[in-house]
Length: 515
Picture 1 (cartoon, rainbow, N blue to C red):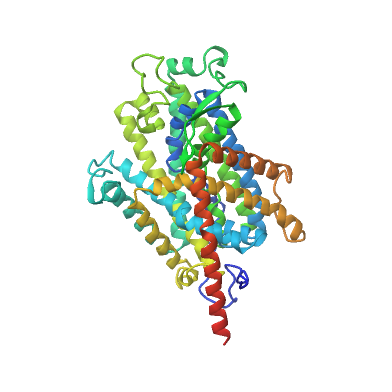
Picture 2 (tube, helix red, strand yellow):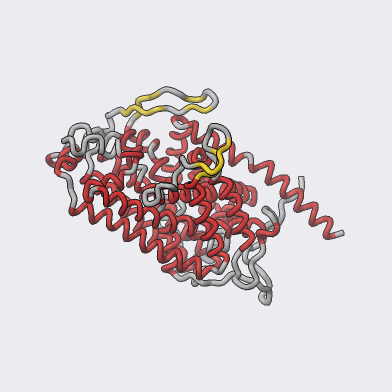
């Protein structure tokens, strides 16, 4: 078996070589990428499904707190790796350097195939869906062409998604400062939108909702959260695995619903992909990870308290004005929209739609900007298409990588299955987070003298706690949600033969060049 290609430093070029990355982002822009990539449409929606499974206000908040603790520990741990290796490609580089090139490739393979591109496509279609609030002709039911009886084809909603993905891809080819400026503007706007939701909760509390969700002395808030309480959950099936329902304890049910809250809080690592373009990265990368994740997760928890103070949990034990409009039964799971409608009537729905349009637009921009840097780094290692390893001579951006990402993302926009693929890879995303933090321990042992301008807070206790918590969630999802976990695992493992084929081809090209 040929040896894999020797890893190249992704952004290493001769000093007089052109083009090169432009360090055009300061701390504010780096933090905007963290926050803008995290805040998409999830926080406005997923609490409905989580509530139906949990059935307890306290457990809903507990689930978001678990996500907050894990995400912040992960970000603080990644801060050490980012300061130690401030190179284009971020997490791909950390896995490559700590565990070997095959692990870096498997991450990059999954990222390109569905994690990054699939998320961009899903968020883009969400943009089209909410654009329909203002322009009814933009709809997932208005087909331009339709293939078969499923959802494959081009409708006006995914056409809107393709339009903004094309626009933002083109904009990001103009240079990092242009892309960062857009990110700064839209991240600021979406943070203000979340603050607006929190403010609404302060002025539009619903006495019936407060009584149902909190009660006297918060008695109702804690209902159903006792460790002795059993919760019924549906067990998914995959090729005959699973099926039916089961009664599980508090720790298990909270782990099950992490699919929603972790997905809503994901993509904070995207800033590490852009390390080659951040000013003073050894300082600004760790700081942006800590600031960005901390602010967003605090807003997320506040938003869920707002949901509980404006809407009843179930909506079935209250007056007719809110019956059927509780968190569990919000129309199409749009909890935040239901909150705004309660406060402002029909105008509230449009205000929320406008906020989500801003949020999704900024999220798409941040993920387009960051993802292309990973494929660039892989190409520099001989593990991806050669053209994606080139930078534009004028702007210093990986233009080919951006357009390849655009092409695959647009194709996913036409697919009726990409949303399911996103569910499938949530488990895989968590596995790669665990592997990367294991890599932190490995590098402490194998490279003890490497410069570490920032060291992970609470090492080794907090990183080890993350590994334990994430492994527990993975184990629970494997048992109770096989329809999400096993396909994700298979998708990752399919990268192994691709890796060996790619390294064999690269080795062959090297031999031909030597001759």
